[in-house]
Length: 124
Image 1 (tube, one colour):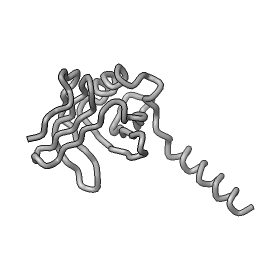
Image 2 (cartoon, helix red, strand yellow):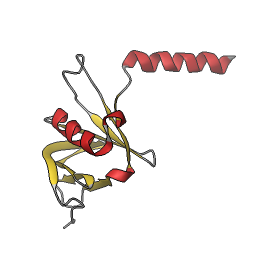
Image 3 (tube, one colour):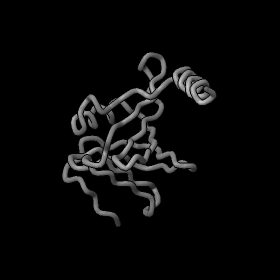
């Protein structure tokens, strides 16, 4: 059995970890780490708060719906999650990493515009 890094849990929520195949389990936001424990004992993820660079949230309908959010580490790795109440999870994370480190993801048109600019710049 895996030992938790947290001594106190702020939020415990049912969640899905998206990595090719989806893994169902519990997400724990605590005082020392962001943790995910899958239904299978071998699937777990523990990210200490000093290793979290930022959290990127996908927003739909002007922020009314948050289907997914990603935790980006200092190493540049991305871990994508979804949960039943993402606002509760993001508010708990805000207390540990600060509000400036929780950002919106780019929209489809922003990504398209960025790629067109890069393609034009590469052809010059």
